[in-house]
Length: 330
Image (tube, rainbow, N blue to C red):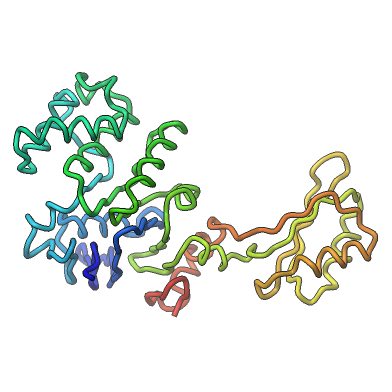
């Protein structure tokens, strides 16, 4: 079966600057890909090449089997795009703008009204439907941008910071909308909000300095965190050194992080040496040392920890920046 989206060795140079370097991946129906990376990593440039807004220096993008460069009309019929900043014609009322977009997409008059109504309902725009776009808040402008991307019910959605500027309730609504559409579409979401990856994404890709440095499920990426399988004990214990000494005797423990959390209690986090389970060893050792355990928690791993590890100055290209396979640098 043809993937709904294919990126084949996408590369983009701006003069001597290599903004994107040899990015390749596919996206199937039902996948929601979180596209992560620091500012300037090449995320927006990659998305612009995938959508045909920017021609690659080399490589190709395909939407549902159609080349975005050689067969752009057919490719874009199947594509919805929310660009950075959600640009729109500010002097148009919201409904007029959506009608203009529907017309530009070649939708006949009979189909436009129902399509606009569906997009407005999905993005909760009915209260501002007759206001000029330029008078709207940043959050409502973002929702107008999302509505225009959904109008023609595309097979592929590429959303650049879809919840940027939204309040917590609005973010929740947009995430529910994405979850509801996910089964029938292939969706890419560029985001800086790591909780969004957990909320809606089935897959996460990290890009740094124009190259993919990690690609896998959120759980696979968390498993690369030094906190994966870490055990945190809340202890009724005032002697930090005693706690550290008790836990550091274990060969499976690489490090112990301590903090005082009030009322004389200590939070002790034991980090595993090799990423494996250490819960039983840590709790047995703590009890044998006479430590009074009040609470126990096992950490699944932290995406922010993995993100920093992959994108700091000396980490992202530690393996010469080569493309990775499902969460492993090569």
